[in-house]
Structures are given as structure tokens and as C-alpha cells.
Length: 293
Image 1 (cartoon, helix red, strand yellow):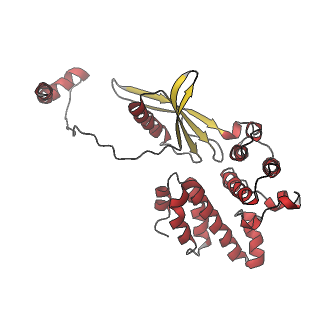
Image 2 (tube, one colour):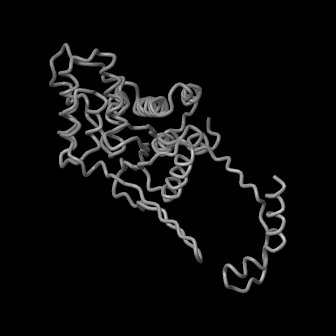
């Protein structure tokens, strides 16, 4: 409408003096910015869903965080704003801390100027402070696996409880192996290397799985004794990186998985294994490897 254009033109011309009046401050210099703000960054929450409950309809966003990334509060605020604009629903946000040590990420985003102030809060939950029994009671293998991230004074005993329950559920061997692989990935987040041979070795013979397919460091050392220590370790690291990429990023990571075996440097493979855990997206991992693949 022409009316809108006229208004904008008037305020455009009066802008310098108008700002001085609004701020009640003397302005030494003013640099005008473009009136169009383009946002090109793509945001990919780890979990996002619309929930219907007795209290009403709302959105839940969950981020799984293993590193003390201090940009999280700002990203949570930005995601909150975009979700609210798009869906016009209440938004509940959670960050689940699944890393080693203490979470140092602030549970709020705050910024202020002369008259404008933003304070946005979200909930941070430290998985290491939750009782594992909550998850062990489940009849879903995926939920049971999460208990390895929970509070315990005896990580090996907890791992044995998880594996024992999985074995008693009568899961087919192929699926069971996949769950054990997932358990290893989660265990790595808590710096837990599970001795599967020791745990599974005490189980009934007909429930055993081929633990040589697991990529734990302990198994890597055993393979090393049979194939040569270096080759065994490389094999274990190949499996660790490949599995981590596929579990976190799915089939789109398969092209990278095929190239990993071209790397012979054990120290580089160890670094890549850590980068898999740190990366939130496949693009993050690609940037971290600095063209090694």
C-alpha cells in the first residue's frame, strides 16, 4: 500500500533525530543496515514432536549434548522463536547431558541493551543423576540401553544388568548384536569400555553372540593378539568409526564409511573416533576431518 510506503519514507528521513529522541542520548555516528534480514542457517533439533495431553497441545524439543558447547543457549532461543512463529504452540525445551564430567552449559540465554532485554530459559537434565532402574524396568530394548548413561557407582555391574535383561528378552541374535553395538556407543559417552567377553561368557551357550563383531577397545586388543597388535587396533577403530557414523547419521554416511579404511594412521583413526561423538551433523564431521578422507 502507498500509505505504508509514505510512512516508511517519513521515518526513514527522520531516523537520525527519532533515535536520539527515543534513546535520550547524543548520537556521534549512525550506520544504516539493510532492512531485509536473511536467515540461511538450517536448524536441526535432535528430537522434535507435537504432544497432545490433558493440559493441551504443545511442542517438545530435545537436544542430546555430550560436549560443553557454549553456543547451545543461543541456539535454543533461536529454535524456540522459530518454532513459536511457525506452529503458534507452546514450546518445551530440554537438553539431555550425556557427556563425561559436569555440564557447564548455562540453562538460559540472556542479552540486553538500553531498553530491550531477552531472558530465555530451558531445562538441562544430567542423565548421570537419574536412576538407571527407571529405564531398566522397560520392555523396550532401546529404552533399556539408556540406563548405561544413568547414575551408578559400578558401571560394569550396570552393563551386566543391561546385557542380562537383553539376553532374557529372547531377542534374535542379529538384533541382539545391534543392541550391543549401540550399548558400546553409549558407553563411550561415559568413558565405559565394556568387557563383553567377560559378561556374555557367563550366559547360556545358545544366547551367545559373536562379540568379535563388536568394536570395543578390549576386543581390539584381542584381535591384535591374533592378527598383530597394530592391525587389530586399526580394525577395532575402523569398526568404531563406521558404526558411530551409521548409527548417528544413517545411510547418508555410508559413502564416508567406505573411505575410512583408506586411512592407515592409527592416531588419525583415534581422532576420527572422537570426532564422531562430537559431531552433531554429518557436515560437522566432514569439516572436522580436514579432508583426510
